[in-house]
Length: 410
Ligand SMILES: [Zn+2]
Image (cartoon, rainbow, N blue to C red):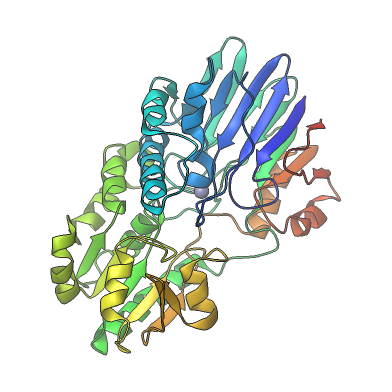
């Protein structure tokens, strides 16, 4: 069995893994890195028989439209992943047009991909021409799955995973396999206690409101915004939601079986005022205690409007809820207290804090999952400091740290 990463082996982004086994060519995820400008993985082989998409985030799904140009590749994913990936790839293309980047695909490719999708439930086994792949929930976000390929050896590809239950989804359970291909985003790092983080977050919103300010909560549209809204549910604040998260909410509401508690999710959304169009933003600004909005790294989206209006107000706060990649506005704000908006630099007077609402398993939980899988070989991917995990796992199994583009045989 030969494995080769097209991207995403040693970095968080542009993931793609090609597996060749018994004359078949399989592709697991095919994403881009949504930086400014975006970066892309290596080209996919033209003879891909089947592709699997673990979940909708662009670093896993962003290149899938090009698969529609391959002669016969089908793309297997859960219905929720298919719907959200369609939304995100369309948005990525729109941003490319606005920013003047050359996109690797056109809207006709996104459309053509609809004919290649095969929707499979998150607990189902997919069989096609002798190929057997079992899907199982990965935690992380609704619709996310791990894929267990039953070939010459059993290979479990995790995509992104979270083992602790969150408001939105339950945690991933380990599966036994021969080869475990595992994400390593949080190798060497642990998360603070989740409930404690949520308490501190609600307390900070309350403190902001009590002193007469407003809390701006930048959040990724897929997963994070919904998790934050559920954390704020029934807190008595006037909550506004703006950006693409609104459409994602609708996709989740239409697939209640993919949520840990659909009734509670629906209930949480009932208390939220939705900003339907830009004309309602002034009203939101006036009425809201807390505004949950995209983009999560402050590089675009309605969040820049709200910050533009409130940044001089020392009573207000900007409460970051997601990972801030190097080079992003959010990272710049955390590191030196400034933001670049329309080519000018501003220094918000608001209080700025970051809360760890991560949807990825921390180091110890990754180690636990790997040990429980009883894999003889663990391939670490999707991480920029994988050595810490290798050191923890090596006493009990072989660990491979692959490099992008270099094939290896297992
Ligand atoms: Zn993800």
